Amino acid sequence: MNNKEKADEYFSKNKSKIKDSDRPVYHFTPDIGWMNDPNGFSYFNGEYHLFYQYNPYDIKWGPMHWGHAKTRDFVNWDRLPVALAPDDEIKGQCFSGTAITDNDKHILVYTVHSNDKEEQTVEIGDGVNYKAVSDKPVIGIDKLPKGFGGVDFRDPKIWKEDNVYYCIASAKNDRGFGSILLFESKDLLEWKYVGILFENDGKYGKMWECPDFFKLGNKYVLVISVMGMQARKRKYFNGHQVIYFVGTYDKSSYKFIPNGRGKTFDFGFDFYAPQSLYAGGRTLSVAWLHDWSNDLTLDGAKWCGQTTFPRELKLEGNDIYQMPAGELESHYKNKYHTSFILNRNKEYIDNDLNSRTARFDFDIENIDADKLTLFLAANDEYNSFIKINMKKKTLKFSRRFSGLCKDAIDERKIDIDICDGQLSLSVLVDRFSIEIFVNKGKEVLTSRIYTPLDANEIRFLADGKLKIDVSKNEIE
Image 1 (cartoon, rainbow, N blue to C red):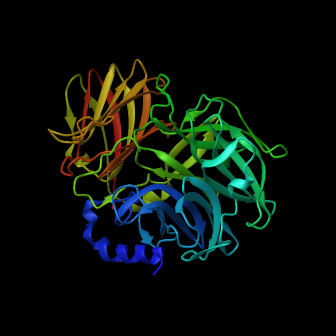
Image 2 (cartoon, rainbow, N blue to C red):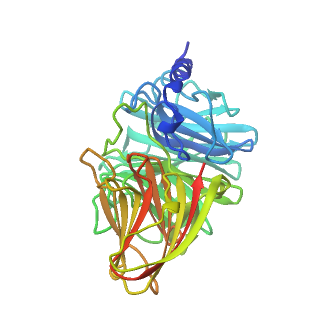
Image 3 (cartoon, helix red, strand yellow):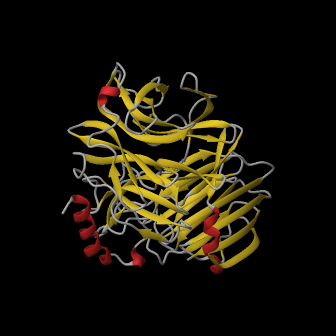
């Protein structure tokens, strides 16, 4: 029995230990065990495939497998056999990577981590079973240019263009900074280093991970998960931070030229390693809804890790806007809409808005208030709140009273646009997470919560008059 078969056997015997009521309703989680980075987000044979860094044997990071699931709607998932397992075909753990569809082939590229050395390999499959194209990594450390070693060389992103396969990977240079190296191949076996797509000048943390590179509109986007990033004012908060650059790609020199500074992809506490997918005329992205710095796992839990609900990305100028993928709408039920005026210091509660598994859309029109607070997943003891300062044009999200009994980052303030007193918010509330989309997704904040499920109210409080229009769509 190889390690894939062992993992599947363990999974089959133990997955029933977790009740559906103990996991999110519409955010993907492993059936049992630990997950971190989403991998291989792709569209193959009419279905969306999601792989992920997976340890089936514990709720902590451990021997890295690739878990595998597929879906048509991002809510109902078919769990498939483990796709990759450590030491089966090539010695080493199966670290992060990506996937593409090439006619009838589903191509995976990923990092093999062994004895602190990292190299890249390729497997081809039929949507369930995968086989390595070689018995050794195809982009080895021998392919690296001068100034780079085999430590911290990982997370390949593959695409095909004009019958040539291209692959970028993160690599740490001898100054300790991350760079994005570019390789090309005609057959997936023989790869050639062609240049540095983009490199860290020391202003963006240290090591770069999980690079994503894609065209959005008529521009190119480079997304990087950064380690060791220093916060600056209300930007780049997390030590593990996701940033993006918008620019152009000079294919003759293999260089990405950004139009400006890197921007924060998500301002919340729990967002890392996003992967994009272009399919059906739109660009989707999914990320790990978690953070390396804060262990907030519930006592007695048998799973750990979830993904964001997939988002559709659009480019306006040099800003990426993100909103939940439209597939969510097919799972709406018990729709409810209301409008009301908030009066000064009078708390407002509408029990028909109560829910812990819903999408809420708020259109806010200020009359004479300075501050507005929305309490989510609330009762008299618990809440997670959004506080908006209408004059200073800031938004603060707090999970300080969400039931966490551990020391953790629990408040975050960002700058937002409020034009003529108008503001829109869309909020996804699930059992163990909150995703906040500001002004049609110009800014997004994503966070875990672990609040008892009977805390399901929404409460409103302002220090002056505001008009609020609310739509609630429960999600089944």
